[in-house]
Length: 342
Image (cartoon, helix red, strand yellow):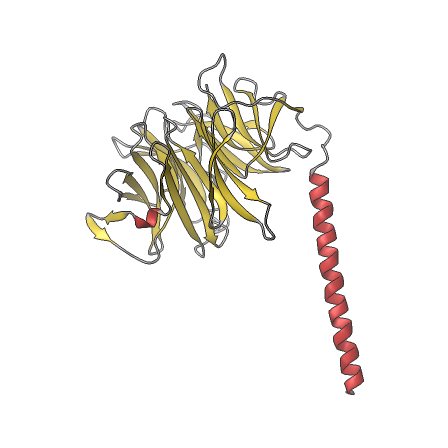
């Protein structure tokens, strides 16, 4: 092969790769623009006031709106007794969100730089920024304590799915009373099987807080296993309680945890089922949802839990009784990360 022919082949390959890259950018841009267009049959959404303030005349749900259109990804609200009704959008965008007692935590993309980055924003009851903290990875979980004084968030710093084992997380806790930020739960002392434990492969995620504003529960992963841990913020310790629990969520009365667990025999891509753990008796009860739920479940009250499953436009919300009875029921389409307030 002559030198001239080799150069021609090289130039042709470079041109082809460039064309493929341009086509990919154009398609991605077209897809993004499509998501900004309102879809026929979608929920009615208008811009208005969204509040996280406790109390009020009626219970409400504040959530990340996933419906296509100009308000996609914004925090929106509906009355809790009319979840399929018209939505009020706030103008504040979040990738992950939670709220309690007038405090919100919003994990959002920071598009001000050359490369996309992320930050955790603490919101007041009027969705005004109280403080912001840079994130080391992709947002995945967020929680606020029942009294609104503590917030937690988890990001992926390597890998992007809990389904496999090749991932790394970082979970942070922020005390709004003192301003103290624990950048990583990995700095807490671990007690496993009654003994002090250290390992370089430790990961934490899925924090849920107790009403005392000191105790929390979370997932610990190490040695190829996951564990439920109880944490003590004052002592800066976590203690393993039980194996094979992920993303716990504490009931409003503080007596039960709903969580996802891996069930042998299921697909590696869809390995989870939802269970409830009674903390006093340690009895586990499987819930009626038989689909694989990769979410940190939310309690609407002491009887019902809500979770997300993939939908046509991102995610839909479903509800199921927390005692193992009944059947799953659709709650909201095109919605994610709900908080039940009021």
